[in-house]
Length: 345
Image 1 (cartoon, one colour):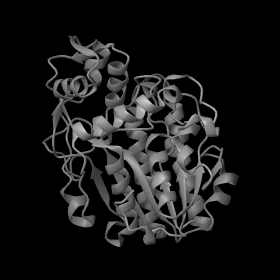
Image 2: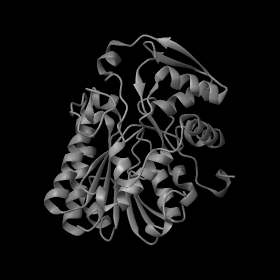
Image 3: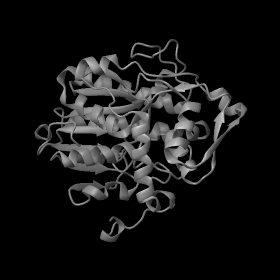
Image 4: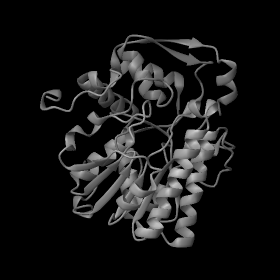
């Protein structure tokens, strides 16, 4: 990717937890292409989004360690000698957390504590970047939402992300482990899982369009969200990692251009030339969980490191459809495709 000076990561060592997932794999590819020595940690838990095919473009240039983020012995070893640690591993499904909160507690809270304690003991000089969620805010009090807004998350998933953020902040402030804390909005683009609708609403709508299935628009479709293409998200992650001014800070990674769900769906159908949509009533459960309008104030990250998203929604959707049309079989199938030379042309 052209958005960073390759010399800044040349021969640097980087550990990416959750590196076979959606955002993690795009980050790994960018780091490898910038000349970094990348180690990936991923437990490949079913339904969490890990896919070996995601790393195909750099398969010979990265080291993959299949382990659990809560495995203290493994993490104690893997953090040693790393210049950068990008922490993206975790349970990322809000809906799953409603019926079973324990994976959130295990991976998001305990896993983060294991990682930070390993760094405290074995590599205090590493720079840590953590990717949390805009859900940590809960319902917005005013729009756009900035980093000083109240934090009133509505679910265990969001609470566990906020707890992870607080743990990392303690290690930054007390133990001097330089860290940057990000709250990501709705990210979309290539290499997301396409098996289920439990996370990644925009990408799931892409699948429905490609399958010529009706996309349901709940209520009147007027609820607002901000959407960010994954390449822009990766750029934000890399830029804060390189900036001393960012260390110890919390930043929104989103867009200050709100889009209604109705606008999003119409754009998806228009760009794809496929699919259709229909209005649907909220279920009582979905209505109770819906936080209402949300879009990010990104002034802080723009002023601090000069980042703002460069890809508009139409352009990002075109790239997303192009990727999944080319590699559909690696994402529609419930099992990972074999990583042989014949899988990519």
